[in-house]
Every structure is written in C-alpha cells, then in structure tokens.
Length: 68
Figure 1 (cartoon, rainbow, N blue to C red):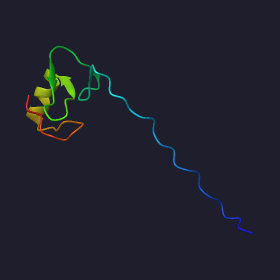
Figure 2 (figure 1 turned 180 degrees about the horizontal axis):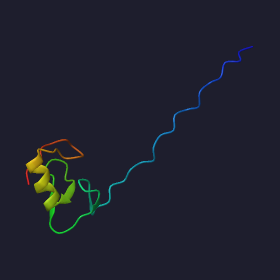
Figure 3 (figure 1 turned 90 degrees about the horizontal axis):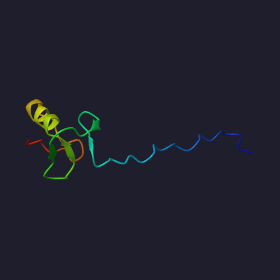
C-alpha cells in the first residue's frame, strides 16, 4: 500500500473588495478632494495622488503613472 502523506490543499486568501471611499495609497478613507485614475477609475485622495506623482508612484490597481 502507499503510505505517502499528501500535503493539504493551499488556502486561498479571502477576496478583497475595495470600498468606494477608500484610498489605496494611505490605506484609509478618502479625505478631502478626490483624484480618480483616468485609466481604471480607482479613487484616491487628491493629496495622496499629488504626493504619489512627485514620488513617481504608479496606480495601485492598473500600474499607470499618476497624473494628478
């Protein structure tokens, strides 16, 4: 007979839903004015988007340059 142990199946993380009023840059509720990525329509705080532009960061979701 085969006594070989089989590893357990992988555990997948729960699905991650992004709320409408959630900034992915600072990972909290959007504060003040809103910037929306023109490519994927993901909303960010305008201040976070301006800072991301200065730092050369990309949109978290679609990886396009932030142009705030």
